[in-house]
Length: 351
Image (cartoon, rainbow, N blue to C red):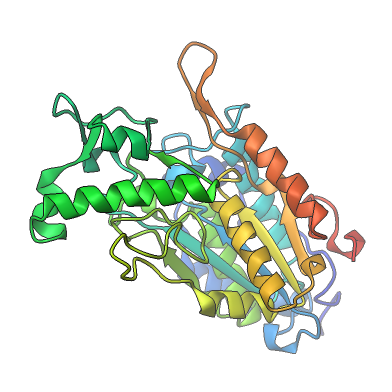
């Protein structure tokens, strides 16, 4: 005989350990989670996700080791220095407490190769050296010769057509600047395909698998970011869709948009609030407007995301995108989307 209804807040499962949210070595044991899920679901009255009358779809953006753990290639510490560590624990707790309310969980994976337009490896400066990490590259600097694409990349990317590649990257930066969302920023290598930093942080993988097993939910993973010539902050589209010669550079992820809009509530969390979360929400709101969907069904878990703030080693920051992130959340709230905290019971959320 089942206990409380599946829509009620649930206790944390006995295998949950807060310290695992900060551990690079922690791995989800899928077999153990599957074995435990049947008893847990029966004890707490957790029904299959297909029975949900109101569908809640949680989108977790890039909760990967390289972003979420202090050892990562691009740890999102925020100004506090512990941002993503605390976000991960709150997000895992949120999933377990709301196991019976969450119909589906989709995780995205930022996925990169050794040479991409936003990595120093792609570029050379006037001395023939790779630029420093955390450098901004502008179209004017490319025109002036301060930065140029690495000719070794042209050999396999565009049949050794270096002039074509130079025109393409200059056009790309110009389009970015005209769009006004981001300039081209050179990030440290991160989320490289095949690396341990690419995988979901163990505590989030554990939570999404346990939810899937308890609820019979599909819980897909969306891969993004592998296009050599464009950034792909948003889970729904690359930053630039067209090449300088008019051919296609990238395309929108209409299938993911369709899946999200089919839900009664769309919940968003993950990293980083200033970049991939922000860009995804901007594209999501645009898609909702185009399709006449109510932005009031969008809920942003503000305490499960942090902005990029790059320490300079002297008590300050080389780059700090906190203010951009705060301003973005205010813009999103002004559209009718809800900015909420994961610790507030879903039954008390607005709307």
